[in-house]
Length: 133
Image (cartoon, rainbow, N blue to C red):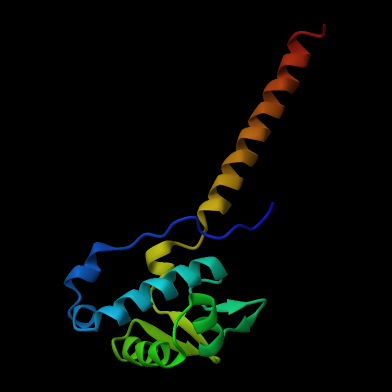
């Protein structure tokens, strides 16, 4: 099966009540959403990595079409707000697995398709036994 990234994210409504999030500048809030989307694209449990290598702030700025200094300031504020963390030089969305789940939507669809295929195969085998013609 192909491993596919998330197609969509669950954006929890608790952010509207999170004082630390609400106190952030508007551009930092949007940077957080962009980093969250990038984490979904990376499909590494909230780690901002590509090919098992941590993405630098410069690389993230390039990928997100953001100014390096603006993103650097936002990441610092997001770490202070306990929304991001650094782990082995990788930026990590702190509650990613808790909020998004361990499986991607594509993984779930692939599993459902495999289950459907197996059911159809079993049905076809039964059909052959009961009707040899």
